[in-house]
Image (cartoon, rainbow, N blue to C red; front, side):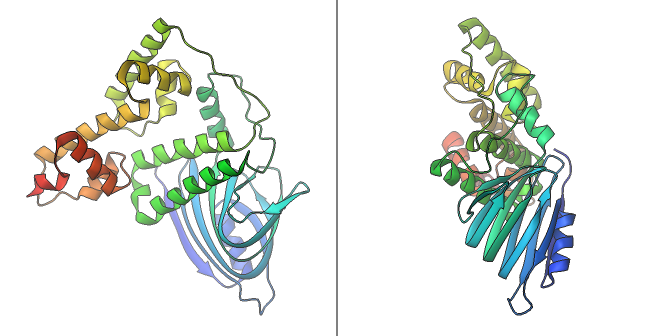
Length: 312
């Protein structure tokens, strides 16, 4: 994952809000009556592969425009109605998809929105590895999710992404890589595709070969921002085949094994570090654990004590 930038600004001028959205990758025109109490605040973390933006927009307002990237809009609170290609719906706690070339019109009042920006090219690469189909073209059939259950999952994933941005753990490349992988698979699973990729079962010999190649890849590159998508590509398996191979041969998933390797590396670093200078939250983030409490629980489960015990 490349370096990222951070955009954080606010205004009460709709024209300035247009400019702030443009700086983050959108082309929109806001409109609001002078006495409608319009206010706009954006906090956005921008990576080369994806972006997470949290907007707090006060008052009554309308807007129309579009994006160059594929954007998943997650309206956390407030009143929000949208229209895309004649399709209309309430967006409040019901994530919807804004595809490049499809204009969005919306009206809202006092809303909080978390947008996930994904590069169509990069998402297609993820899909081709996920389904082991080098000719697959990602085309979404609808702006709406497959079901209420998929809406809930997508909204949760977006909320977690915003929390990572606000807490500062987004700055760690391993955390960003894992988050990108999660959000990409959420998009592919939660919104209907025009294609219907089918999984193919591996023979036992092919499964074992994929597992061994995956283990070598993880052991060699765990310190880099690799994802399950990268591991699947290196092993020559789809993501579902990869997880089946790890469950059969290691009793865990590929992601679980990657976390074990990174936890071991963090443990080694703790053992040789100067206790007076170790920042546990920073160490956890550098090894891909965005939440310190979860890192500490995994550490205690594996090594029988809290990581802070090594600092005493």
